[in-house]
Image 1 (cartoon, chains in turn orange, green):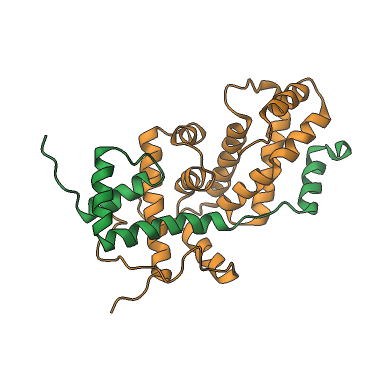
Image 2 (tube, rainbow over the protein chains, first blue to last red):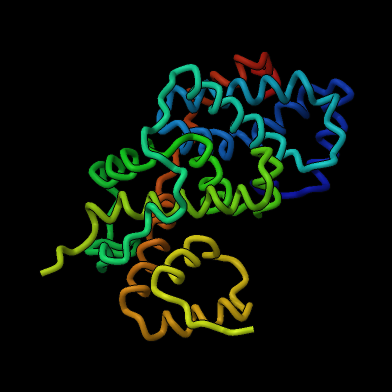
Length: 195
Length: 80
């Protein structure tokens, strides 16, 4: 989550903390796209993503006075989105049933083949979206969040640890399992059959 | 200390751990050497990389209605 200009952002935060509603609206506009996109990638559903985005910015509006700038505003927003999506998932009890206890479980040396599709040769379509959705929905939300923060949003292991309240080894372990699990799920559809 | 060559399983596990991170440690150098000569592990590496790229592909845009709903919800519509 990158702000186009950090100095402007600091100024906006200061103004918002003094009650400037225009500054608050400007902060919302800077981050709404990133927050919505991130929430959608966790929830895989537009209505839930919109709900999470609204709750996240409501929290920002209510608590901006307590923001001391120790972390970036973006880190704070990622934390609120992640917690909100986790809360939603827990209330709906839609965790995957796959066991994630065994580090080695997702790596099968015999199950390796080239893929017939690559991001470079594939056109976006609904079929691919469904395959990606089905795979990531099987991943427990706390693993999903680590994968999205590190690999999709490009945050560091340390930042991801702060947002998810996990130690660095725990972030690495979850990322490892999430990558291997998703790769295996996509492999079922994308791998060439071996003769 | 005795250095042992990594097995395919070590390599695949290491790819999942460290993709995108610093690849200059002695362990990573051994992994890279293995990757250069092992088609199986190369395929695995590319498939993990592709998995990440596929998930980067789909993004949703905030449309006007979603934006208006948000500002309404926050009571900031008059600040447009």
